[in-house]
Image 1 (tube, rainbow, N blue to C red):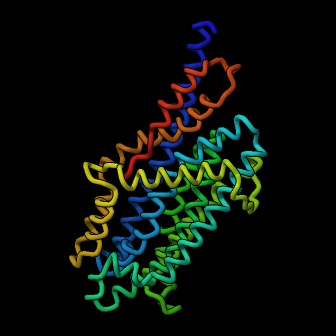
Image 2: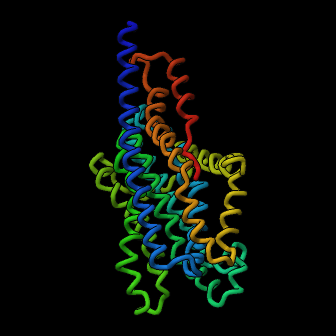
Image 3: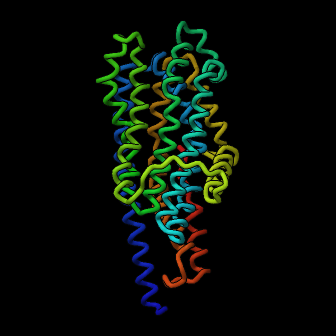
Length: 349
């Protein structure tokens, strides 16, 4: 290939990557701004009291599993495999793989949710035994935990849909989908919370139901775009499928890697999670407010830039790796590009 042609192709890839990162960045920052509004609304309604302490701990349980095995692990495991199927086997095979993964996620996370609901009391006791010293606080945390556990299943399906859309180079709507969670929480604070005392539930339960609506909203906002691309949901179970086994194995490996080796400011994921839960379970009423402020720290916003570039590069790197030689790049070049971009990971906050 002529040097000028190579430069043109390289410029096109760089432009595409920059455009993708820009769209993801815009959607991500929109979600972050809505997140600030969400926290301000919750602080205005509930302050830094027992209700917010219970909500933070109850939401931490499904959120921790999501952080380890759903979002980052799914992006690293599912997107390259799905992109490979699109490139080498066509959309029909890729859609079947997507349905296999979605079905597996429904079964696995559904089992985890049921187990969590049944064993919510001992689980919360392990994380927040100090709450028993405050009348009704432990029971409130258990109730909120049982309400919000299905959020894990919803967000797992949403992340799978996000991976399929990213592989199809549809970035804006998937990146915007987390904003649905913030919007649902904000709306529930004004619509659902006032209704809770009428049905005999604490007001903070309205926020818990809002979290479920936010998880559902992440699915619904992506569904029309994915359907226009040709995807149709089918519950398919095939444990012998090679692609499904590869994705599940990579999810497990990536999740364990994040849980055991990832470092956040010199501390492991387990240490940070334990620190967060301990802070939330501390009886000091100012802990919830400080926990909210910590979520708005500058490193989280700075990390958004790296996340957007990595998310936009992940499908492109897979295309470079599995594209046929007639696309104009050697196998050595494709391998280099794949290794260069596949090392990018979502920043942990």
